[in-house]
Length: 596
Image 1 (cartoon, rainbow, N blue to C red):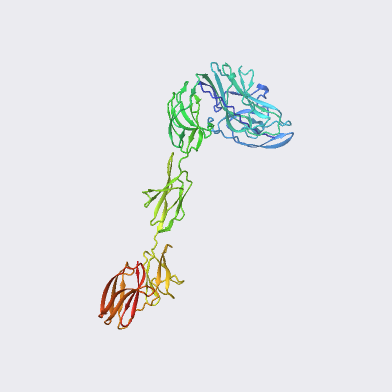
Image 2: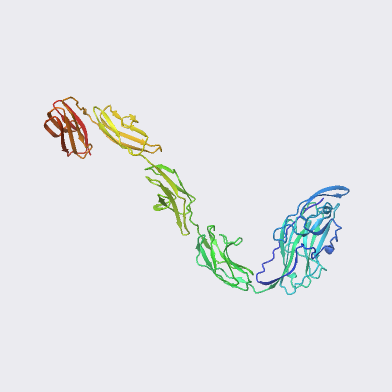
């Protein structure tokens, strides 16, 4: 049965800050017509050549497929999965040539990507396969040496890759066990960088790769695969250091500009970039944010800006790092506060259409800070109000208006959207009343504005929808009369006035011997004009009486000829309701007058 496996190794080269020069000693991408590795050698007790169950090969095959093999005289089918494509960092990716283990059974079935037949103890037995650099490299004069390569291998606990080095032209080999000695459980391409003191100052250094395949019941493709092998050497230089960053202030707002100063010692190469970094709110630089940089080989002030999206916090720190040579500076040593910027939020209206003379409330959602409200009649020229808060009652409005809020704090200002309150026209209710004969009162609708609904409430339980109704009361007394008018928008107005139905009978005699009279203005402040028309000459008395029938004043007593006569009266009486009495030879007439 074909088993599959793959494991990733992740040894990271220690930071080489302070290294002044580097030299590339060896590069192999396996993409040429030939390569600098000898495949399937017998080193480390390996199975030589291609006679075993598996062997090393170089090609650019990544496609899997289905195949079969015989074990104990029986055929067994298997499936080889496709090999993962290479990342862009690998030369000629995504499907360049690479060094890898291949299963002999898979090759017989026309499949030559990274795969292996696991040792099962029945038909396939323990073995290992070794490939090595063909020639030596010299590391004499180098203080540090790094070998890097890309690899993958799923494998299993008994199926894994190994890396070896030799310092005597391949006569003996030493296993690299730091940070790991076994390469497996890695199904996608990963880069490994290795450096050991034993690599430096050697005249004959070379590296080899071994695939170990021990008896197991669980393993998986892909097999051990290698690409882009590089060896670099470094010469030590002076140690670089960057002092703690300094700047002015301890509290900032998102978007604030600041100048970062620092001191740097040592040598920095051409193309070096000094970068100011911001920690997270807890002071950690695990994932720092770059806030400013300068390309320079010597220390110089860095113009930095706190990003607008920086979260509020009190534990921020700042440091400076360099790129070439890579050096990390000390942080500023004191916590920095990043304050919240203002947020005006969204203004929404309780009711965006209201009747003139009424009010509504505009409310902010998502606000950060204290809001000051502004108003505008045209949506462009806003005038600040004295109201502060996250909701605003408009008060009684008589015209449409735009309303918005501004939030200001130490980090700036923010303005909400402008909410438009539409004020609908509202009619104004008004009426007058005049008592005629007996208990009849005629009402006049003096309302202004446009209205299409009318409702009278006469104060005695009766009502009317007429424009100018005449209502007959059943008894004397005071009545609170209301008139309500409304328009097509549902906007309404109500006017209420108190009328008094007097106890005396208001009877205009219309005989041929008596004409008519009128007193105006009514109501008045006590100054009246009285106009009479008599059908026949006769003696006439004009009196003012109260509602109890007591005579308070006589305005005229004497003979009047037929025709029209006018009188002026200036009454010094308390405000109230009185009756003007006209008494002739043939009868009497009365009119209610009101002194305000």
